[in-house]
Length: 271
Image (cartoon, rainbow, N blue to C red; front, top):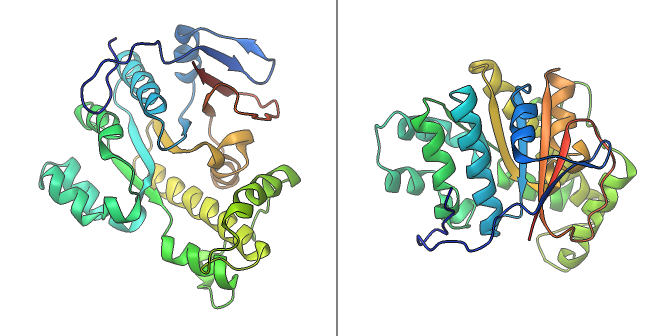
């Protein structure tokens, strides 16, 4: 399969250098990975949003899953859940792509080149699958980052309470916070941390609702930080629905990544 960038230029290198199963640190080949993913109902695939090669890997995996197992649904962090009606109209062919992007406010809400996401969306639609927006409302998240949970709508807080995650999850969020803490819209770290927890909780809730609306194999695309070590969306989704899942964390080199061994978690390393 020839891999292209958004402008149609060929990418010279094979995008996947190696695939590592973190549970036992064993390398697996791509055919074995596709077979293993075929046993899962939910497949989380991570990315560095701006890395074109990560998007090419997603497209390749989705294409192979569709070819072998048939239609899949796609759930995306990049698309806000509140825009689901517009997304449905686009998937059903009722509005054009330009209108869809304008109405979901792609440039304002997400901002990364849609050309990197388009092949995945088009593949899923052509397979007869649905596209789900699971992105949390960013105004709500920003408000929590400034003020904490004060004044939050009760229906947004899980009945079981917030799952704060292990120490490593908090440390990872802290590493994100440090370069941003001088920003005027960001409050103390405890508030920022709660905002990240709520973001993952809301995406997990949105994913659960999407799956229940159309229970078929679903590919979830989000930033690596939301799926690595099952800390973000996966653990919170599994608290709501117990289903066979796998996570694919995509990194260029190892980028200083510290992984805890998890069953059905794979690390895809690019050159």
